Length: 402
Image (tube, rainbow, N blue to C red; front, side):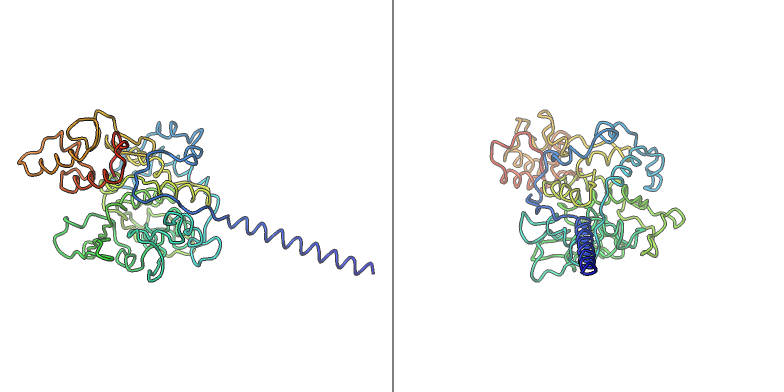
């Protein structure tokens, strides 16, 4: 009888221990956060509460913005060295990175498991497919996309190769066209060898295999730039905008074999211009919140994209909206070309009229360059008209253009 009781107690203890371990295991896998409820391509005009809480002490924005950036940004490898801001950002995003997702499958703890929340299309069952912005679903073949190509990195499908900030769902055909090409300006830049990719009549990308360049849509370029900046700092990959010799590359992860050392974007100028062209949107900010909930760290370049310019010793564009600096001064309101203190349809009309004239004043050019491409084109007028159509009239004054 006593032996039977002991056996029963032993079995009960083993079961309790196994349940405890299972509970710990499930906790370690992380809980699924709520679905992303924000809309794409609506400029983010404020830091989230989660973003505000993330930065403090030596890593407060005041402390970070007081640090010096690169003394030599001629190459992205050189820019990493003797760079106090780079060191601080790497330390912050590394020390707070407490959980690693798994690359493959759809089970709990995998990238795709969390994408259902972090990348959701406004609280729906579908999620945003990177580069194209079309929703996942029937007839859409999904790939797990390394925005920073794994052939040009020291990771494969672990560490940086399974980082939720970095890995995104993508339409397989678009991902195949992207391949491991360098991000760069193709449309209107290269005269021959360019292929245009469309989905349902909408241009999604331009690729020039001979030049080894891939250009995504304008309204995704900022997302790309901020992801590349994150990987550059968090995972210390030196070949951001310049090639790096094999001897200067970080050692590959155990599941990786090589890093070509080729740059992932064509130049520092392109990197920063893309970041400015496509400001942080509300969906991107909420995704940053949800990813922090999963793995503990944030992409600081979503919260404070201005740090990208500081990182490389560059000057931030005066009219660039950021979540911490959402609107320009009333004396220099982007898009207010007639200087009446508001952006109205008259401003778009003024742009169109000025385009037909032989000369365009510096005043008009600086105020009207809504897409921040340093040129005044019909696209600027189109952006203003489109933006005005999306906002109530009482919200037009002092708002940044997207």
